[in-house]
Length: 249
Image (cartoon, one colour):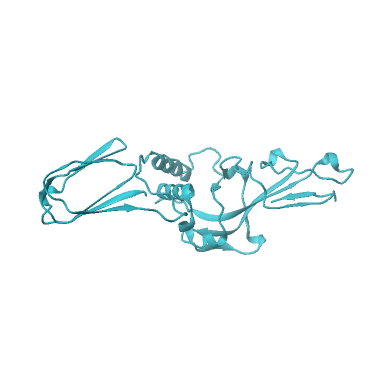
């Protein structure tokens, strides 16, 4: 349950005002004066403090509903407490767009690692496939970027670490470094790229062979060290051949 909805049917009564309080704001809703001739609908989220005053005369006819979210992909809707984060993010994006930050050429994009894993089939549904906090964060960024020269895209990221231990070259063994995610922390190479990119409506904007993939920099990846505690989807190991001896993806 995330909200309550009440439909007031035509009936004559007095009293029964609804007092709502949320995020330092209060509102009183009272339909009693026109209750006999009109139908009204009231609704509020569960995190809104509410009080229904007693009916002082007559009878009020009402249909009361609990609104329930049954989709695991959707975060529970809730009343916004503050538009501060959206306003602040929009200010950052506007300054970035106008080149007001130092070294603007270092990153002309940001790749944000979502909390959940999604397949290409999921992304064909666009923004609707997102779950929980991912859905809320993308909605926040979308609102902040509205009207600015930015585009929000969805993609599967391939994070590939090629690593070796030079101390083991003599016997041809290799050491796993599965927890390493920064290029300056390992004695090898890190490749991050996208091979298929979708817009928020689910349309494919880039698709093809690896030659068409987009490589990205770790400097443009957020949150920092986001994959540090993640286990790889797969590993390949072989003895020293003069090149890279361990591949971790």
